[in-house]
Amino acid sequence: MLAVVGEDAVHRVAGLPGEAGPVGLTLALGRLRSLGVGALRVALPAPGHPLGLSGPPEFNARALDAGEAVVCHGAAFGLVPEVHEAGPAGDVHAEVVWHVLPVREAPPADVPSLGEAERELAEALREATEVLARLDVAASGPVAEAAIDAYRARAERGREVLAPGYPPRAVRVLELAQRVGLLVSLAYGNGHGGAVSASEMAARGAALRPVERTARRAQVAAYNSVVEEREKGVR
Image (cartoon, rainbow, N blue to C red; front, top):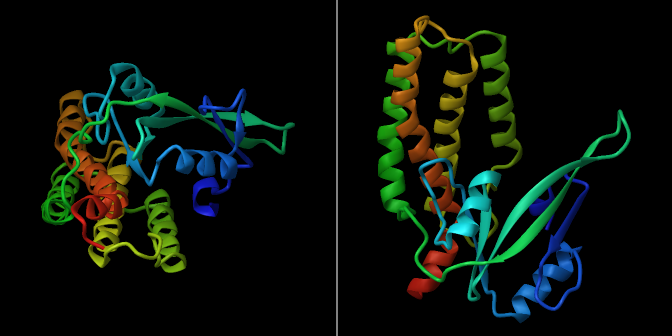
């Protein structure tokens, strides 16, 4: 539960069958289980890439706007978060309302197996490093160093990046996907580096988009690996 809530102050679930209004997260998860939900899948869609989604279009559109969603396994529901800021100035916190919507019971879009994700990530890491060097994107300086230090600190604090019970390969895949994602974010966030012209900036974006896509696919594969193994009867 703490992993879901994170640093947010309040999480509520709206649109849950049998409830007239929003309810707390604990009650909502219990109600979903009573409705047949045995597990939850993560979706991380982006424009042009409905990663982890299965439709219908209305749900996909809401999930795309949010940049994330949860799809229930065992019942045709999905949840899309809506984040609000609340509280007085100086004490602002995030409140999240998860909207329950109908989904299509179909395989999620473009989610690789763990083996595929691991192979793709190894290549993506090489590509990201080559792109950074070729386009002379700044990979040093205070901003980059702070981001790398923060990543390393998170890694040391949370070696258990997934809950107990996940396959060891899922942990490896998620850690590598986060590393690739960090490189991509540094490339986009640390100024223009040597890419001073519009054409060079466009080339950087074109080169990094497939790498970022691979990292997101791998993250979804890692998070959802327990569900996939359960479907195959492997525990």
